[in-house]
Amino acid sequence: MQRAQFGVEDAAQVLKSAGLRVTQQRLAVLMLLYQTPRHCTVEELYELLRQTTPAISLATLYNTMKAFVDAGIAQELPFGDGPSRYDVNTEPHHHLVCDECGEMIDITLPDPALTSAAQAHDFHIRSFHIEVRGVCAACAAKRERETFKR
Ligand SMILES: [Zn+2]
Ligand SMILES: [Zn+2]
Image (tube, rainbow, N blue to C red):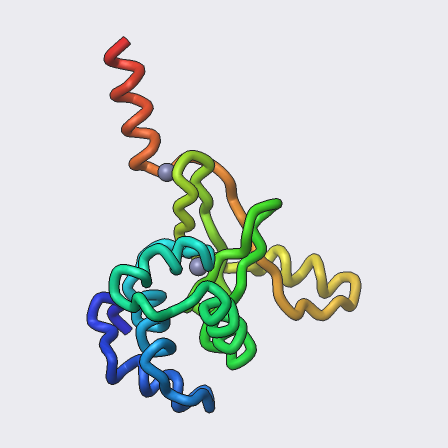
C-alpha cells in the first residue's frame, strides 16, 4: 500500500481487521505511523501528533502503541540503549540505521546462508533482525559539503 495515500478509511480497516475498536485517537496515530517515513519513538510521535490531535496524552499514546503491537499491526524495534521505535512494516525486514540522523531505512535480504547455517544445527529460526549502522546518503552529502567549506 502506498504510504502517502493511507487515509482514514484505510486506518479504520486496519484497526477493524486487527480486532481493535476504532477511535479518533487510534485513527490519528495509525495514519501518522503510515505517513511518516521514519521509524518514530513514542516521544517523536507525540510531538508530531500534538499538531493534529491536541487531546492525546503521552500515557494514552504509550497504551495505543502497545495495543497496536499486541494486535500485530506495528512492530516494536528495540534501539540500543535508546527508546524503542515503531514500524508499521510488519513483514520480516532489516534496517540500515544512520548514526548521524537516526534515519532507519527498510531493507529485505535473501537469507540462504543464514538459513543453511541454522539448518546445520537443526535450529529453527523464528525471527532475526539485522541492524546495519552507518551514514545515510543525505548525511554523507552534508559532511562532504562541510569538509569542502573548510
Ligand atoms: Zn543520516
Ligand atoms: Zn522498518
